[in-house]
Structures are given as structure tokens and as C-alpha cells.
Image (cartoon, helix red, strand yellow):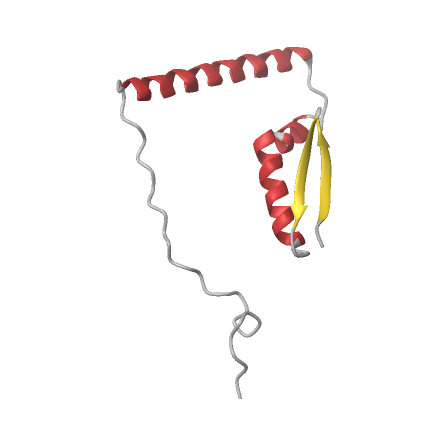
Length: 108
């Protein structure tokens, strides 16, 4: 059985499918999508009234930040500056939080 969680974000529909009744996984995916859309940032910003002058200042700073990011990415592509070094991903598996509940044989 596959149910569907659907949330309306601006004019785009955000969909998350629940597979095998695994709602926890669907919620994690939904949170990631909402984070990428900037929904949490927008809700936090709209919690209080923002004066027009503060809004203009914030939008100007955001524009400057976007332009600097684009210039930095272009310089990396052109080879003018070195790309940032990525941290290696540790592929060591963490132990299960409740070993007796996750696939271990019963003791006895």
C-alpha cells in the first residue's frame, strides 16, 4: 500500500511518497525538500513584522551574497582559485540504537 503526503509550497506541489508504511523515512525526505525550498527560513523570517527598510537591506545583502557565490564558482571553473577540499565520508556503520530490536537473534 502506498499513500501520499502532499504539501502546497508556493505554486509548486511538494510530494513525498510513503513506501511500505515507512512514515519516518517519508518525513525525513519531506524535511530535506522543505529545507532545499527555503521554507523554514521563510517561516522564521515571517514570524515577526519586517520593516520595509530592513527588508530592502536584507534583500540587498542576499543579492550580494548570491553574486559573490556565482563569481567564486566561476573562478573555480576557470581554474583561477582552487576548489575547496571536501572532507572524506566515513563509511563506518554506526551500531543500531537497540540491538535487541534490530535483527539480532534472541538470547537464550
